[in-house]
Length: 219
Image 1 (cartoon, rainbow, N blue to C red):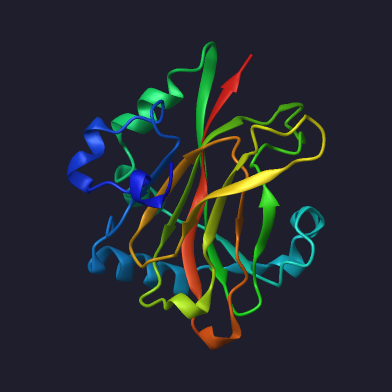
Image 2: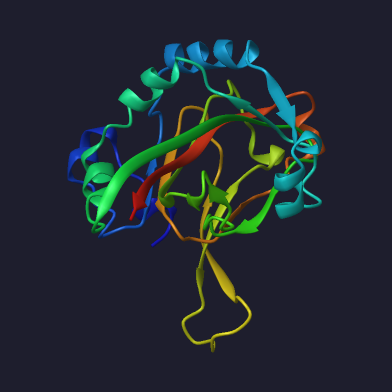
């Protein structure tokens, strides 16, 4: 699969299936008014930089100093737009679910910021004496007003090389997805990916996104 094969129109979302294609891209998923609504909420959010998040910084060294913020009550508006058949069908395909979870945050990447290659499997930390929910679908979607190709910040998705023996991870890129304003990206977990470093030519422009997961909990 590549970017063209994974990009669909909103009108075709009801027929999309993660069983057939593990990566979904929808351009212009969010209207200009919706993007402005969430940017205004981001402007009022309480942000923490990577330097303030020691556990995350340990997982992602040399990644600049991007920032993260909690989403307020507007999360309901966000989630209401993601009630898609493909999400429901993939989540419900897992057996013995006892709870379903979501977890999303605001993110801001400036010049010099990036996210190193990882596959979104949890590091195994306990939550209230039990294992964390399993991440099933990763989501990233963009709310900045403008983004130019020279500014970087692309999302790169990989798959393992089929002709290599088990051992050290050997990856080949399958998707290079530019952070176009209003676009939506979803992909099944685990799946290796990274965010390219934002170039200094971006100046004061920030790569603004909401990202997170649909998750399941099992006994």
